[in-house]
Image 1 (tube, helix red, strand yellow):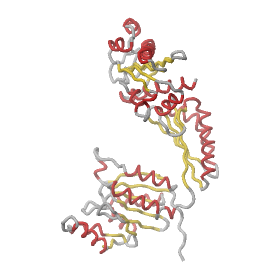
Image 2 (cartoon, helix red, strand yellow):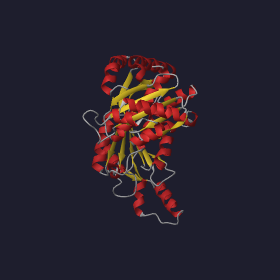
Image 3 (cartoon, rainbow, N blue to C red):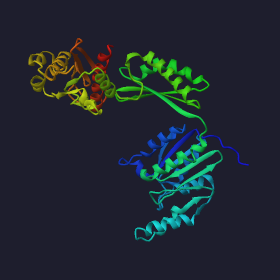
Image 4 (spheres, rainbow, N blue to C red):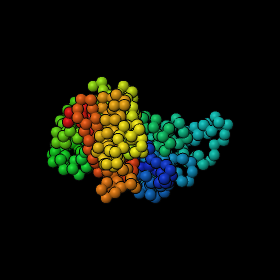
Amino acid sequence: MSVAKAPLRRAEVIAVGSELLGSTRIDTNSLFLAERLAALGIELRSKTVVGDSRREVADHLRRALERVDLVILTGGLGPTDDDVTRDALADVVDRPLIEYPDIVERLVQRFARRGLKMPEVNRRQALVIEGGIVLDNPNGTAPGQMVEVGDRMIVLLPGPPREMKPMMEALVSGALAARVGAERLFRATLFTVGRGESHVEELAQPIYSQWLTRAEPIETTILAAPGQIELHLVMRSANETQARATLVDARDELVAALGPGVFSIDGRSMEEIVGQLLADRHLTISAAESCTGGLLMSRLTDVPGSSAYVAGGVVCYSNQLKTDLAGVPEELIAAHGAVSEPVAFALAEGVRARTGSSISVGITGIAGPTGGTPEKPVGTVAIAVASQTAPTRVSTLWLYGNRGQVKFQAAQMGLDMVRRLLLGV
């Protein structure tokens, strides 16, 4: 009589390959694996990259088995001596590797179809751990393996994504699905702008800390992303309807605490949110950009359908082009400097007059790393938003980071000023 095994809930991924430790190759498999595991309600708790060392792979596998129910190793299943994943698994579970004649025959036939004789080294790929289950690889020579050790499961998959992904999909609909039980993971997100991570934490922590004592707790993660702070809420439940309703209520609590800085509750980016607001109101937008170099317009036009609301814009980096293209008076620049609220105001008003757009943005600043002064250090940015129906809004910001970060944050804050104007905030 078979004994039912505990459901799989937590996983680790170990990517094997010394090439992944260099500067030219990255592990992209774990992103795919995290998404597919989450769909089953299995939470990915750790991702590790290990070089082609039998001892180190075995050490990482042993430690992973102490922490989680499921360990997936990718890579290291090739035919050469540095493909050590099978051997490391044998060391950890203390079982022999056995050569499967039918795998050898499939490999021989695969080479024969190309008019080639199979090299003897490929026989290594026919070694399967005693008691393991072979996972067919329709796109390569390296079969995968699945091994159960008590309630825990170990899965070996090849490294190339073209081979790994269909094998993982087969597991998701087969062996893994049979071991996950009724519970699933449910998620909610919100993105906020205008506050730093610590200030968001100060407002949010008293709320989300109370959720951890529930029968079905909600875990909250706060992430600092470029130009925004993200809050990710996750709960495990067997009742989808109830879980989603609970997460909506929890998310709404945070929205109320964080106020109008919250711009997205469904994962959409700032440019998508602003674009939708413009489209819903049948409005158009233009921009005159200096330090952002057209980034604000580029982000808006990254959104499909943006031709319905983007009128156009100018990149006026030099003072002369600020005058020629956006109509900024030379004496205004001379009196206040190119990076100033009066110039940002004039940029916004000038480009709106020239394009006939409903709304326009003017951005001027010092992206760095040079060009700053004690009065106007690197990161000083002036932004204005002009409208046909509301007074022009203008603000000066002091942004931190390298040149690219300052540019992105300036574009983000310019878009957020448009969002707030459209919402009447």
